[in-house]
Each structure stands twice: as structure tokens, then as C-alpha cells.
Amino acid sequence: MRLTIKTLVAAAAATLGLAAPAPAASSEHIVRFDDGLSPAAQQAVVQGAGGKVTRDLHIIDGVGARLSDAAARRLAADSRVASIVADSPVQLSSTVIDSSVLGTAFNASMRTDKLWTLGGTGKGVTVAVVDTGIAGNLPDFQVSRTDTTSRVIASVVTNPEATTATDTFGHGTHVAGLIAGNGSNRSPDDPQYGKYAGTAPDANLVSIKVSDDAGQTSVLDVIYGVQFAVDHKSEYGIRVLNLSLNSTTAMSYKEDPLDAAVEQAWFKGIAVVTAAGNRGASAPDAVSYAPANDPYVITVGAANDMGTKLIQDDVRASWSSQGRTQDGVAKPDVAAPGAGLVAPLAPNSAFAAQCPTCVVGGSYLRIGGTSMAAAVTSGAVAELLQLHPNWTPDMVKAALVKTAREVAGAGRIVNAASADRAFVNDPLLQPANQGLTPNPIVNPVTGEIDFTRASWSRASWSTAADLLRASWSRASWSCACWATDEEIAADPTRASWSRASWSRASWSFSPDL
Image (cartoon, rainbow, N blue to C red; front, side, top):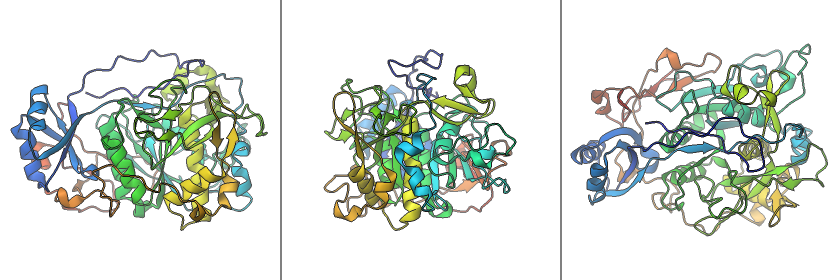
């Protein structure tokens, strides 16, 4: 059963107008193995316990499996099984606030406009957006006003229930616009021409749709999306991974499989930027949810720029999550503007219907949340990596944290990103993430998932259905989660794909799920 991706609502903010559905019990689990079991042996272990393998999760040395309570107990008693974690829903970290607050000052507040004068617009850097998809055919995502080629250079669907690669929910398009939208690509006759731009208006995007068309997803879908970014980092030039979402199950980063997945991306050279969440500063578990609780990644809280270009009046957004994780790590690492930001509206998406008063000029939407704060930070990271292509994720994080300015907030002082100061900082003088212990399934020597324990490295792939193609992207991919049991038995070590559309054929959902 798929679980609902729902928007977080700040206590003092207006809601999107929809009541959150009650979560349903899930029979899907994330199973990790020890001792280098072959794929066939792993499948046999799950089936022998009365379960069914649903997905290959080689990025965390495990599989997704559909299990009854009895099957889960039998697997837990098997010495070959390292751990079993019930799949849980994921929440997008967005909320609607006072629509009278202007959202067009965030570039000045973050000082990313200063980098534009140096040519730092994110050009040549790709940001992978793990979200609800991107309406990549909008003019804001074109290469230029005269070149209508989309800068969404690839799209992938990792949720088996999605029927299209585009964004029918609206969250992912808004996030992508704050990262890399460029309203100057619209026609000069358009009333919205040149009014709105993301922090990295020339960056490329890869859309990783982890939700179905109604905005439903789970941790399994998100892990699969992170895995795609890691596997195709070099092919698309992915340097930044944006996750404007949180798990709904609080676990130590040393046990959470989603934290393991984002650490793998980090160690592979992808700077992971994630939303802190919108639980405020008083909740004891405010920052205890993956991937925001992972000590390696860049966790972003939200500031309110008050709709002005002045930085002196910026304050911490009261609903932005802040505190210490269950492992004692202070989060967020930085804060960025996230209150009432304006970005492209996905046509015919749910967001417009949920909040008609949030629509700006018919083509944009004004909403807020740490989702938005993470997005503008991802754009800033893309700019830094364009200007400093040799910087590692640790160096980017060090530069951001060291040069962040203080912003007044409830409870304590938080730091806000200052992109131009980070650009001139030498991150080697104060490196980030020193002395940390990675998730146990991440090899502490190589900084990678130890694939020798799983006896495979990559899954096999097959051509995707046309239904899931995105005609505006240069490449389109999808998860063939309707594969048969015979396809599941295919050799998962075989990597035989081309640049055409394709999808995962082995370790996939059966039609009855």
C-alpha cells in the first residue's frame, strides 16, 4: 500500500485546505543482509520466510519486501538478516504562510545575486530533485528565450503507481523553480517576464519523481530515487541532490536506511541538501527524521526575509525545525529564506486547487517551508560548484557553515547562508564532517556501500512504457514495477542499457501491490 506524501503545516500558518489522511499500516519492509548472499539466495531467504521481494535496494545492501507480521518475525530470527525496518511514509517539508509576505527577495537575502555578477549561475552543474516530478516544459526551465530546450535533462519515475513523469501534484515544480527557474526565458510580452528566478537560473535539473500522481510515496521510493542519482552521477553531471522531504519515522541515522542512502551519495561526491522540517524548535523530535538527522548532509532550516532585500530584518521562521537529533547532532546546519517564496506553478496540478489564493499571475505559486529553504540552498551549492568545480561535498558544507551570518530566532541564534562569502572562503581551513561515524552499512574505509557483501553491483534494466515518458526531457526513465516473477529472477549483475528510455526490470513490484 502506498502512503501519502503530505505537506507539513506550520502552527501559525494557513493550511493548504486539506485534512491529512490517516496513515495506513504498511506490509512493506526494508530488509538488509550480511555475509555476501547472492541475489538468488536473498530472494530465497525472503520467500522461505513467507515474504515476497519487491525491489532491489543495492545502494543500502538490501531489498524491499512485502511481509506479514509472521514473516517479519521469521526473518528477524534469521542470522543472515542484518535488519528489518518497516517502510514508512515521507512528508514534503512545505507549508503555506501569510500570502501578503512577498517572496521575491530571497536571492538578495542569500546574496546569490552577487555570484551572478561573477558568472556563477549554476551553468554546467546538474541538481537532481527527488520530489513529485517537474513540469519541465515550462519556459522557466528552458535553456534561454530563444533555445526552448528544457534544462530538465532527464526524468525518472521510481514510484510504481505514477502514470506520468511530469508533476501533477505541484511540489517538485515549485522546488525546481527555486533552484533553477528563470523567468527571463519567458516572452517579453508575458506579464510575468523576468519577475522570478531561482538561485541558480542556468543550472540543469534531473527530475526524480518518487511520488505517484497524487503525491504519495514512501521511504522505499525515495531510496530508489537516491540510488538512481548515485548510479547516473557521471552521465548527467549530478553534483547536488535536493531532498525537500522527511521520513515520518524517527530513527538513529546509524540505523535508518534512508540515511545510509544519502551518505552513499555524499561519499560518491554528491552534495546532499535536505529540508529540516517544519516542526518548530520546541518539539523534542523536531530534527529526528531522515534525512535531516544525518550528520553528513547539509540540513537547511527556514528564515523569513520579510519580503525585503535588507538582511538586517531577517528572522528565523517560527515553524522551522531546530534542535538536536536522537544522536546528539545539532541541526539545521544553516538556514535560508523559506517563507512565502514565489516559483513556477505546475499546470493543472493539485497545488493550485488546494490554495487558489497562493497563485501569482496565473503561472506562479507563493508558498513556504523548509522545502523551499532547501531548494534555494541547493541552487547556491550549484553556483559554488560551478565556480569551484574541485570542491567536495565536505568543502561545500564547510564553506557554507563557516561564512553563514547570524539571524535572530526564537530560542537561539541560527545561521543563514551567504553565498558570496562562501565563494571566497577556503573550506580547507575548517573542514566539515571530521570525526563522524558513518551508517554501519557504509564502509568507513571506502565511504561506500560494501557491495561485496551483497554479491552484485547494478541491476538489469529494460525499456520503459511510453506512458511514463517526458517528451520535454532529453532522456526519460521509469520503474517497471509491474514486472513478472520471471523478470525478478533475471541476473541483477547484468547492466545492459542504452540512452533510450528504460526501467528497472528486476527486483520490482508485482501488479497486486
